[in-house]
Length: 155
Image (tube, rainbow, N blue to C red; front, side, top):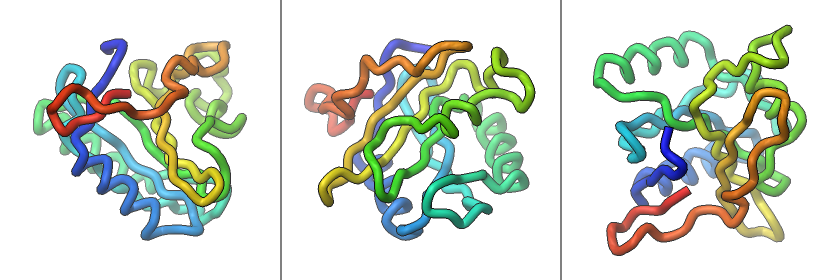
């Protein structure tokens, strides 16, 4: 996985729209692409229907994974929202990056975790990488930034 990934404005807008549509509950989904470019956003139902946590519908998740593989893409990010807090991973977010009962084995070791959060009424989007037995890397804590004149944003 590259040290950076890019996402087109329309995909970012779709993720934000998804978060607004399910507000005040958390939204969740998967982003997929080739190399360092995200090409698709997949909305997935939060079966917890909760304002403070999410759990992806496993059937939808499996179907999305199959579609991603069929299209020759790779999962690049897992996204979710924090409807009433900043875009930083919670302890629950970090714990769920690992297989249950295995605090040193990540479910998706190469993905970034994208969080859409709220701060003082404004949305912010940040990406984090989780490493085994370490806190998430926060080198991207400044959030998304324009990527040249491409209409894309860089994590």
